[in-house]
Amino acid sequence: SRSSSIEKNYELPDGQIITIGNERFRCPEALFAPATVGREDSGIAEMVYNTIMKCDIDIRKELYANTILSGGTTMFPGIADRMQKEITSLAPSAMKIRVVAPPERKYAVWIGGSILSSLSTFQTMWISKQEYDESGPSIVHRKCF
Image 1: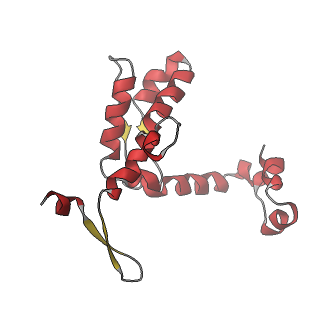
Image 2: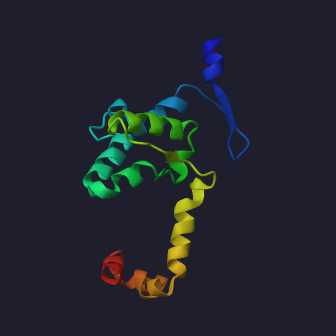
């Protein structure tokens, strides 16, 4: 039946099995159409388009051809194809659109942060636990901006 093809079982860390239905599609859909969850924000593809359009005209072609997905939220099945389709519908018709979804994208932000923190030029921005405990979040602005 149609409903059983939508439903999928997941095993939680404690061993409990839960069945998820159309929620599997509604959650990622909110990224593209925030109005589906009562938000007036732009969807993710529209945000990418708006960001590219705010950049210098000379680099837009490169940006359209090099959209790279990263982070755990981009692990939804089919998200790269959907982004490609949505950005293509917004961009100038002759523009080559390429959305890349590397297999390790779930960890890309962490990897990038670890590389950044290992650079000698970044050491002046390091914050110890003691400094953070003494100053709170304001220490980040003081040392990094």
